[in-house]
Length: 113
Image 1: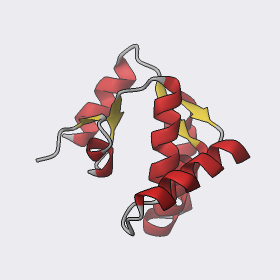
Image 2: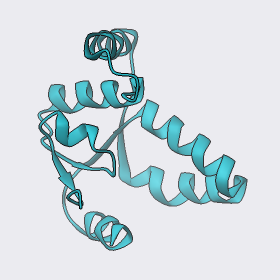
Image 3: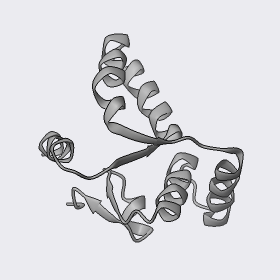
């Protein structure tokens, strides 16, 4: 299901936005679980279709402030920076498997089961 959704996004006309923190987290996870060939594939095939919002010091600080205000251990800095990026860009829909996005009021695709 997730693969089919990703393929439909690639075929569509929507801009796919990610932060540099999400990209960093994805590279680390893929490298750890699947190795450098998978990182190469991620860089070759997925990275070019993404618009990357590079995290500035100001965006980082906004994410940290949100993280500390939330005062919840399972919430990550990467999530909080993502929320900030989405709010600033007016993005309301997110491709994510993380329930924190729905908690923040974003429309999550695929919907939580």
